[in-house]
Image (tube, rainbow, N blue to C red):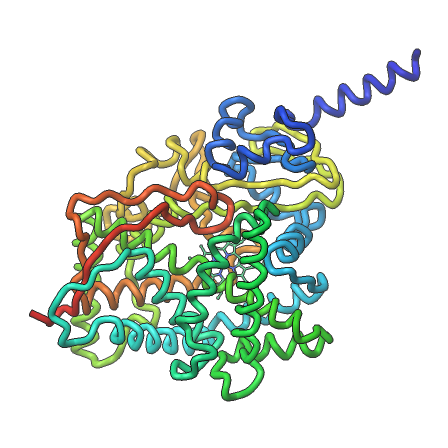
Length: 478
Ligand code: HEM
């Protein structure tokens, strides 16, 4: 009896020290269905029930969701007990059918950091600018007088994808095999199936489509970084060499290229769409960004040098972008517990995390959509991140304490986004070019932003359900 009582006490106290557990009604699957349908709604429901930390069962795994931004550093700074790579490898296998050794991920990341900083970044920015110019020009000719109509999401995603693909992976525009439009068409099909691949919920016919699209994309990416003629960036050449030196076979190399295509192109287009969409549906914001851009454009005319490639200050644009990302960047920041850990919350609570479970931060709910931090969080306010004097506002509070993380579109800590600066520069160049050289307006002046596709919560930038119809023509055409 004493023995049984001891076990009871052990289980009782152990569970007392753990976050509240919610297993869901369905055995093993747990909350998987609700989670996959609309993760944000589900996590909000759990938050109301359990508070800012709880553990849910999803497809046999226990996932502890932490929603207190004051406590995020306890997770982000403990890469000893909380591992980034294991879950990343699970996703790599599911989405890209890719297996790469653990140490190679670290090496390629170090290499990537070098290629997306300093002089290398400056070179990438100017190649990107050239490609964007050429693609925009091809879309709307100088003497085109009539409006062209298109969905803004399609417009932004296709242009930025193609420019990004040409800048990083190369491919001749007159060579059909690696024509960026062909790559984009296939990529869009792949992107449409991505969340189901990640959750292993493809229907049999979707599985077939996914496999054939993957195969086509591997073939299209096969020349990238192989020869000087491929036109690939120094980064893709170096990445290809790294894979070769590590003895990765050709098939796996191409799968790795597809993963890199996704990680470098999957978020930029959608982010630019949300920003342009919010500007067009908020005339006051559009006027403010246009005013800042026109000052720069005047300086460019006077000095004769392109300024957008460089470190020119654009606080209004920066705030408008940060606000768009606050509303539409919704990554899960997931780590696997590889060693039992006590999680110390900022308010003094302590919880035991079990080895083998996962921990997930969802900054979209807090800080980003937290009404205690942002007044009327659903509303787009372009100047939320501006101070009275026009400089960047960085002080935001929760529970009376200043927040270190008040938005987290790029993740944070050692696994934060490597391409952040490149992405920001790209979006800035794109929006600048579109607003300076083109007339762009909503087809229906009273149109609202489209709804969010709820199945994409957790995968980085959100995407719209449907599109926002716009029309455009070159500025000087009458
Ligand atoms: C608007 C555009 C982008 C957004 C919102 C974004 C966001 C993110 C986020 C949230 C993470 C994960 C952090 C984590 O799990 O802790 C990440 C990782 C990463 N991003 Fe981005 N990203 C963007 C564009 C780019 C671009 C253009 C590149 C490359 C040039 C890039 C390269 C990477 C890489 C390599 C990682 C993995 C870092 C690692 O292995 O630790 N991203 N990004």
